Amino acid sequence: MCMEALLTFSAQRMARPEKANVRNTKRPKLDWKFVERFINIQKVLFPSWSSQSVLMFGTLLVVTLTEQLIIYQVGILPSHFYNVLADQDYSNFKSLLATAVVLIVFNSTLKSVDQYICNRMYVSWRKTLTESLHTAYFQGRVYYTLNVLREDIDNPDQRISQDAERLCKQMSSMASRLIVSPFTLTYYTYHCYYSTGWIGPVSIFGYFLIGTIANKILMGPIVSTLFEQEKLEGDFRFKHMQIRVNAESAAFYRAGKVEHMRTNRRLQALLQTQTTLINKELWLYIGVNMFDYLGGFLSYVIIAIPIFTGVYDGLSPGELSALISKNAFVCIYLINGFTQIIDLSTTLSDVAGYTHRIGELIEEMDKILHTQCDYDPASGENYDFDSDFNIHAGPVDTAFIIDHLSYKSPYSEQLLVEDLSLTISQGSHLLVVGNTGTGKTSLLRVLNRLWEADSGFVQMTTCFGPRGTLFLPQKPYLTDGTLREQVIYPLKDIYPVSGSVDDDRIIQFLELAGVSSLLKRTGGLDEDVDWNWYDVLSPGEMQRLSFARLFYLQPKYAVLDEATSALTEEAEGKLYRTCKQLGMTLISLGHRSSLEKYHVVQLQLCGGGQWEFTRLKGGESSSRDETK
Ligand SMILES: Nc1ncnc2c1ncn2[C@@H]1O[C@H](COP(=O)(O)OP(=O)(O)OP(=O)(O)O)[C@@H](O)[C@H]1O
Image (cartoon, rainbow, N blue to C red; front, side):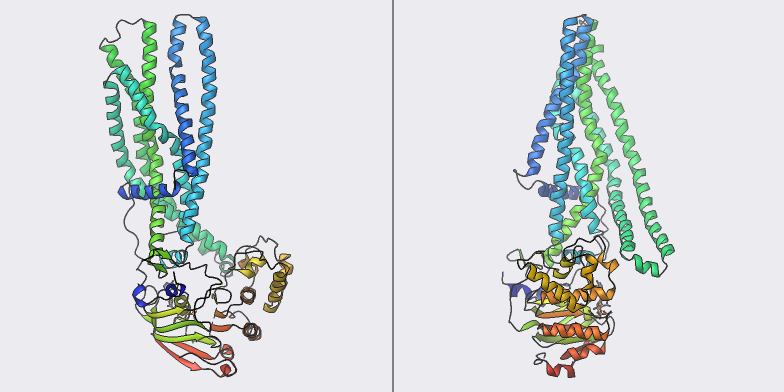
């Protein structure tokens, strides 16, 4: 798809972001929506017939079926023992004992293999599901929209990291019991019918039906409470993360007490919901356990019917004992097959809760992706928001064309800027000023397509990244990793082909930015550091490091959002002059009048949609002002 066409987004395609701060009031249930979401997740886990998951599932089926065959043989051993003991047949007793030992060894090995495959399947499912969630999450601006503009999808991080893990764990624990059920139930139904006539299977099926209906009723409220509990779990964890990231600021406020109180408040909310969940689960556990124990008696009732109606009157006591033992095993096993399914209802309610949380996230990510302005409904293609480094798209000397642009903040009706027209070209260094909250950073959000405009036309005519346009956000962003990774960010290649030449460049730019001391502190460009960069660097050092990044990437256009606010005017001057020497056109946001001398034109945002342009004196020495 034509890059320029994709970058051009006009008013028709710029639907306002939906008002997403309304909480999703639909309570998740064990309903058709659950089935739909569950199937969607299964499609991710089992992408094709030859996938690893299908192969593992097939192996598990073979292992559990073999295990069941052996269990059947072990199950009827007591009836053979009754026979040989009643007949005092010593030689058969010995061979029976040997068979029993072999069968038990086989059985325990298969049980362990079964467990092993389930564990491997859990890891494989977790990998597939989490990677698929990551693919959607990091596509375009989905992670930004979810975390900044949407309030209805709580804790996306927790859904991806914890809920996905728990879903896979619970499903793998259910797998071996569920996979074999159709076979064992059919097999033992046949045997039960053979031993007790129709009365056995019909009573057991009726019993199972009642159990299922009762459990469905008891499980209903659990699913929504589990959903809520997971949300509160995420909120609680987020609070701890907030303190971890902002520990120093909190300590300056001596905020231990207030943070203690607030964190405890979140814990209380979580524990309250957890208690409610446990209370609701009590009824389910009562139902499940009652079903288990009543099932144990049902087998004797079924066997008693032919005995008391005289069907087995002609048998000797030894033969009758053996027959009762065999029939009891068949009935008990059939009932056991059903009770195992009923027992799974506690796991199933967990699976339903997690399925709703992950299913909802998948649906919302998909929706966001399809409503973003870089999605083309005709071709179904998405312009790759991240990967247009090194692609040159538009006129060589222009970065942005803005035509009659109006925009507002997401949940406000008040326009921040109305009807703004402007072309930013090479050499037309632009300074954007204005009071707090007048929409300076928002202009950059619209230019960078993080926010959609209310009306008008914005075209970014260069590529993003080196040789194009680069944004330095107001809060310096430092990634995890080595010093080299900080400098070359957001480039992915850690070791470019350039090798040591690249090292020299990085060191030179660190010096120019005034942070060469970091080389000593880290022990080298590629030395792994176990600190959090935000904790160990001062705000000024972070801003300087961002400039080192800018010098390294050398874009044609650098968009700087209060990028020198923590530095002295002298340091600011040095950094700005270096940018200009490296041939960058600067688009700066800031409050300081000292910035004026590095720019040609000033755009003042006056609030309420108003704005005005001023030609700056400092710009006289720069290339021609091409703004309208
Ligand atoms: N994610 C958001 N959701 C809703 N409103 C927002 C969001 N981000 C910013 N705003 C609002 O948009 C308005 C403009 O914000 P913006 O960040 O553009 O201000 P600014 O002019 O850059 O201010 P400053 O000089 O303090 O950096 C503000 O009223 C702000 O509260």
